[in-house]
Image 1 (cartoon, rainbow, N blue to C red):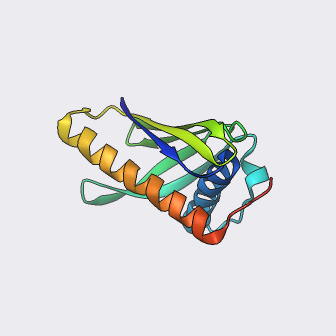
Image 2 (cartoon, helix red, strand yellow):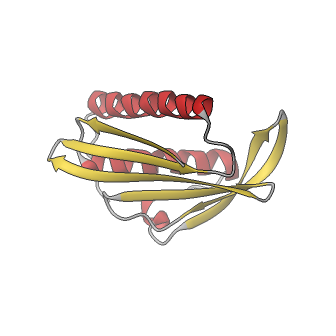
Amino acid sequence: MLKYEKVLNVSASDFYNTVLLSIIAEIKQATGKTVTIADLKNGYKYKNNIKRNGKWVEGSVNIRRPILNKEIVTTLTVLKSSYEMKYIIEKISEDSIKVTHIQTSPVSDGFINSLLFKNRTNKRFKDIEKYIKQTGKKETE
């Protein structure tokens, strides 16, 4: 299990909606289907091609029922292996949250994987925070 926590200066709803909108864009790219945040409320499954060991293989993505402004969990299954990615959102104030990203996988969580995970997650969180601040994102359900 890999875990990374960071405090961001954005609201819980802005972070939650931005992540879900990113997932929606990925669904559109993978399937050509247009879905909404409301479509994800009861969970959603789709197929996606993923590069694995230099080859493209079909994977299955399962978005579990998100908990409004608190949690988003996705599971990716590729070649009989499952990877779970979870965002836990804790409100500190109206414009500040602590986000925990947890990833579980059958792959070793060695030092290199842990370092890469932390660097990528830190960059992703900074990018999300920057995007929200630049766009003045105030999405509604």
